[in-house]
Figure 1 (cartoon, rainbow, N blue to C red):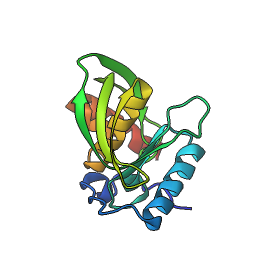
Figure 2: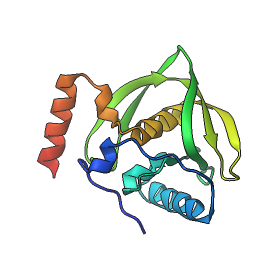
Figure 3: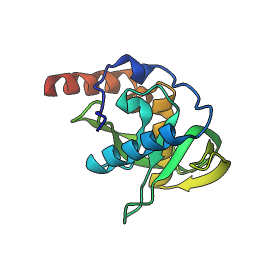
Figure 4: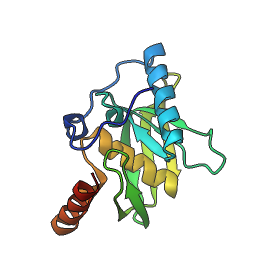
Length: 162
């Protein structure tokens, strides 16, 4: 099974490469992402978190689990004005988290598991998770959305925990 790469691995700071087509190799990576996400447990995971330079992610904010949405090349198309606060964290930097405010609803365009372009609305925790994963694919960590002072305190605490 693939493993989470620790912060500050360079792949976490580099925008991931576009996926040209959906093939069996991509489907295997999605399956690996789902397994790792469920083992954490988490509500989303991006390929870069496993050290893979590909614009692939999965999200599953369902209560029952087993509802994972597989995304390739996701792009935020629309954001609501209404915001939602949520405590965010990353397995790449364990032991720390921060409350962030993100749009409560978003529309995302992506290639689905059939290789078809899809436009989907996400709301609530689904919205937060998909935005968090897209940030990862763009080389951004959740703590980059904090003030300089809060980010420095969070990174200092994480370093202490290592």
